Amino acid sequence: MPPKIKITREMIIEAGFEQVRESGIESVNARTIAKRLQCSTQPVLYSFRTIEEIKLAVYEKTDVFHTEYLMNIRDDDVMLGIGLNYIRFATNEPNLFRFLFQSGYAKGHSLLEMIDSEDVKPILGAMSQAMSASEEKTKEIFLTIAMFAHGYASIIANNSLEFDERTAARHLTNAYRGAVLAAKEEI
Image (cartoon, rainbow, N blue to C red; front, top):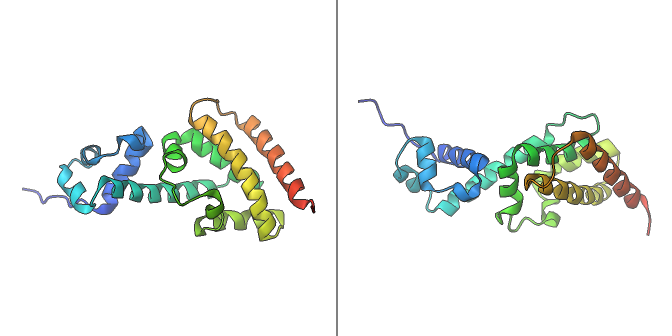
């Protein structure tokens, strides 16, 4: 008889991540994870106290995945690249996008708290360097663009708009220019 495969926490988190990716957070439970791992629910429930604990671990994995996705910039313009990647993420990974930003699991992660988090520092650093702007001005511009891109991405993720990269790039560029001009004004 072959030895039993040990089900690890990482395997459970990965199975939960894939379940969210395919069917949304609503479909994550011990049974769906166990089915993916081809095991009973016992190892799943042994490794985590509750399904909620699994969902929080999957949220953290999804957040890291999202940050890596944003930083894989294909465009020459860093600002435009980050904004387009945010919208591409909503287009290509709508269930993950909704889980991160529309499921209620981001509690305690308001936009203002997020901008000072360690996760966002690489994004702000790339933006600041690309614009030759101070950290304060970069944050101001980032907030404006983030709100614009989030609205755009949310509409796409919820199937209310078809993604057209050229149009999205034009809209993001206009929003970026407006944010930069506003940040330069001394009131």
